Image 1 (spheres, one colour):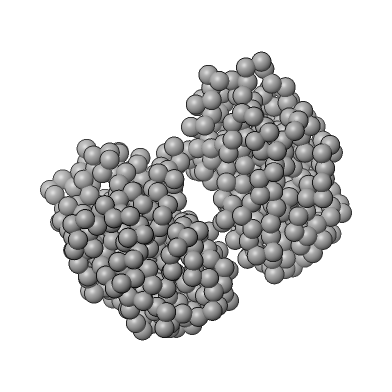
Image 2: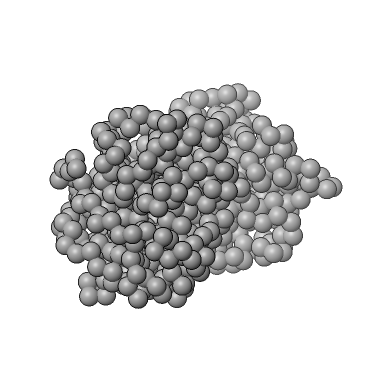
Length: 281
Length: 281
């Protein structure tokens, strides 16, 4: 593990939820939220097919402008789907959801250090928290599948591999940090469709930031992701890298705000929104 | 003029710059900015072809979070291309530009009232202003033209007509207000291309918010726009309505922040960015 001070700690990998329950892909988002509220945890790729998943980061109101500006200045990793009012635990993306309980697993941060990874953050919640829900690349995996593009990590029953890169985000106020990417191996014959289909969904990271040599992103070894699981490449597969909603967590590690709550990588918020709503054509 | 308290005052129509100088479409953005800095004013549709135009709104830093959140919650009318640091008069969209002098005409607002419409705002500038540059639908007119869609207001040498609608934006903090739209008449045979081409440019308002009956938007008379000029429809033309970057000015009128500076409707900031940069595929 090539772990520096700017790199957030890796996840203890839960089993993917979609594998833990063979029916999870057919769940409604509400069913998924209730199961997670009851304590089920694990990566959510493939859960509640066709419904939009979201990254979470909650920061004190005093940091909300910096975070919103960081997102605006870095729209590929941080496409904002909703921002709550301070203290609110609900979102327009799912009217009955409670953001403190309805994600599979959370991370709690103090001064940039990971201090807890609970499945419920009611004990950590503060009245001054502003929550950001940020688009997730799991959303476009359905579009890839529909276009015939194989999605290796789903085929292999693993969490998507994610890497902290050497590329720096554009700073905003007190926030700075590196770009985090997810990687999917794509056969050359499917590369055009993979780029086109993801590009049509700019609200969930859009098209890839890089295709090919991982060294261009400062990634030494695809087999050792910073988060998630390594995934096996077929012989001709091209590694394709998309900006990732874990980027705000890397900014937390690098910028050390006094307090933050995030989702655990790969363990997303299941919204009631449908992926198709975010497709531009 | 159906003018209520929530409706910003209409423009005194300058002559379109592109008509005032037959070469304006071939200007570089820098040439356009220099001409505007020297005092030239007027609508900028068609100026510096292929380069991205932007709406401007500058608010005191105390109002910046509300404005950025308003933009995030209303991305169709308010797609943010850049936000400056407080007091800065420059933007990443054009490194040598001065936001106080380089637009053709400005509007200065106090407590929601229009108090001045100068061609230079150096005398009004304050060190606590945060400037928002917001995508403009003039950007996709080139894509429409390239796809063979006639652009009536350009053909007729007029500013695009803009209307305050009965649709309310999603409020954010102290900011609320109605959606403002621009209207372009489109022949039925070109409607599909007009929707597709604009949808591929979500950073400059994307696809239309409505096609057809103006009454659905609370517009009584297409011949009496709230800003810009009326445009003549050909017999079969369908009125097509796009969200408009004048919407923040309507929010200023409705929400009465103590101070704001904006562009004058249709008289945009000429950036160095190229329209193609904002196309998703």
